[in-house]
Image (cartoon, rainbow, N blue to C red; front, side, top):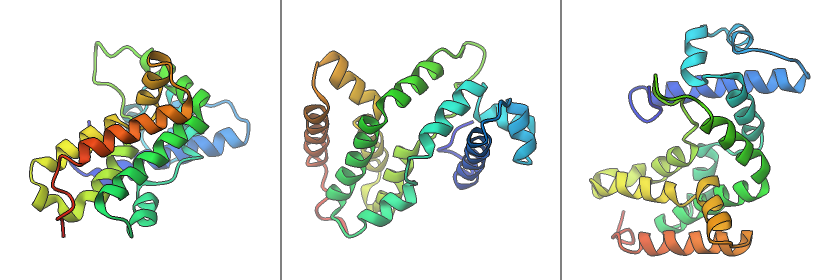
Length: 199
């Protein structure tokens, strides 16, 4: 199952409902299982397992999600900007979020990457970056054609904790230069697309 195919809006709502249920249980200091989340969210166990294969992944992401703006909010906040500046605004938000919550994001990734994916597909990640970019570019989807998915995928790769880890751990950059380098890369990439003439 993918969050980017089929009934995307419904899948995202279901996933968000599960995160909010876990957040509620975490805020009460309770110990709980995926079965408890299913019961408290009036969702089937099978559905919960489809989105989160284990309780550690769910709890790690639920903790991060508390501090994260929705894709809809980000697009609303940046709607007055040009297309390129809107995409850079979204990137800046997610890269700053990664810096501000780096230990939590690193913990989440370590838990997620320990999962055994040999027998099934990977459990679904939030895909918030992709969702925000798709929302921002949706009015221009027909004009962009194949470039729509290329821009979304390429921009997603340049924002969030994964590129920040590469910039900091591999390139040995501090947070601010890492963020600047990723912004430069995305701006350079976007300038190769004919985005200034979109209407």
